[in-house]
Image 1 (tube, rainbow over the protein chains, first blue to last red):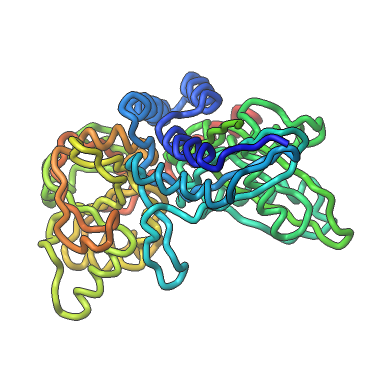
Image 2: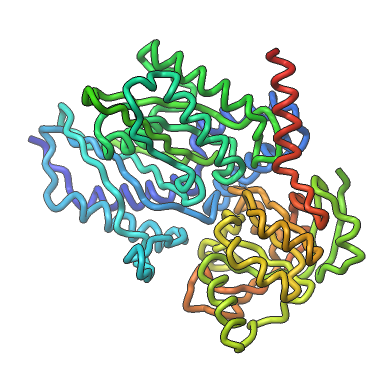
Length: 279
Length: 190
């Protein structure tokens, strides 16, 4: 058993929140650069150039790439042989509070969904835990902006829908979203499981780095098909027309009930903020 | 698709020249307002209290900036999704609002009201918030400060870059641009 200090978790999470907002991840930067080369719309090309210039300013000046610094979402893998000398959820939330206050990040969380009232420090975070072999803790931050999150959807489909049904659903949702989620987007897809698991998988699928194909060739193929169909919609950068609508598609599948066929799509904006640390 | 440098407030003479697809560099005063501020603005009209600033010929920028660091005029300040303001917008257009900056689709009621009132809708690049903040020379909260990032701010901007998405005749670049490239892509793939 290895003991990990709660204070260290707080310190690391504080930094993760800032890094995710200031520092465009290399996989996203590469995808945007190659999209800029390929884009045929002059407006689209210029928008991609501005997005990349923006990321340079943000990195250099340690300021948020986007003013919507998101709802703080974390995926945490806890090693079975790791022990935290305190409450891990509290430690993470303390890190969020410090990171958002000291990093000049926007506090976008309301205390009550109906009655409002800002919590003042962007807590509480949304945290998902998994137990894995080993004695380490891996924390992935995926701060999620409202504009793209709002364009997400879930459908309790019929088993007869099959792969085609999922592809049509995802393409339809992206098509309806148009310019709203800040394209070029990243598309996360969940298939199977229960209602809530399916939605969660759509988000979790986004943890796979851009450009890395699905390890399952069947789903790798499906991802390719969705990507082509989405990019053929013509939505383009910021929805003003072009051939770059989507930077990547990622699917997570899970066993399902014989009667159910849930499918979910979670849309990410072009910043696709994600940062991770292993303690 | 022309490029124009314009100064605020927007006059009919300026608005007549601007077409969907044009790039604009705006200099002058603009006002910020997003979800909660819109509700308050319309409530203020309904109650007869009146708006906290003269909206005639003005531009509203849909933004909730991140906090400014010491020495900064404003934090990152990119556009938010405009559609959430749709239910309030026609009322403000009727009061003389002439321009809106945001991102994303507008509803039919808004476009109809824009055509009726001769106003335009512009997009700033969503997510280019650090870059955009460099074009804001001054920022001052002038109303609803209790709303934090959602307070109404008066901004002085210099060569603030936007693209005209919907012009005063109702032409919409979101559908024109998308159709153009959708057609091209279909031709290319057969």
